[in-house]
Amino acid sequence: MKIYTLHKKQNLPISVDQAWDFLSNPKNLKIITPDYMGFHILSGADRPMFAGQLIQYIVTPVLGIKTKWVTEITHVIDKAYFVDEQRFGPYALWHHKHFIKPIDGGVEMEDIIDYKVPMGILGQMAHPLIVKPKLEEIFAYRQKKLIELFGTL
Image (cartoon, rainbow, N blue to C red; front, side, top):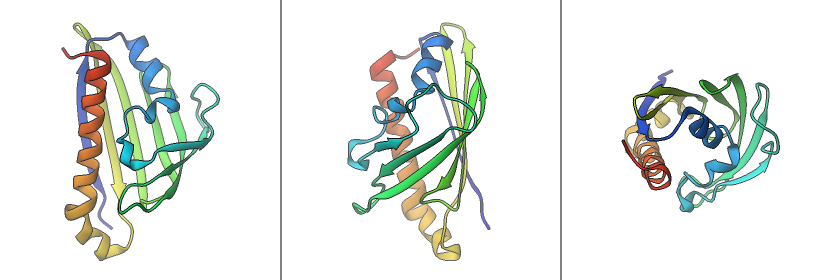
């Protein structure tokens, strides 16, 4: 049972309030997700973020296969961090921590994702070939889009 971790940091020249307002709104996920993934929110994004919130999406991560993904916001500290955990979807485990902290001239945004791929040894074999490169690509896209939207430090 191998658990992988993806860790990303990005600095942006915006306030904590601006960063929080953008990142804590599930509707903005579509903006920072590659178009080919067909990201579409089905339900749960109609209120400000709160612990216990369930959000249902459709995504098309690989080979044009549409996948339903249900996440729960499990922890929220206003303007500091939130955690989303997969309840149903493509991973055997998905635990994504989002941190925002003030720095000189802006904010540091940090993502720590702990995840496990399904299908045992087959999933572990696919991880370096498909899963990890796809996650790296998605987060590189997010970094680029956030720079386009907010600039860079």
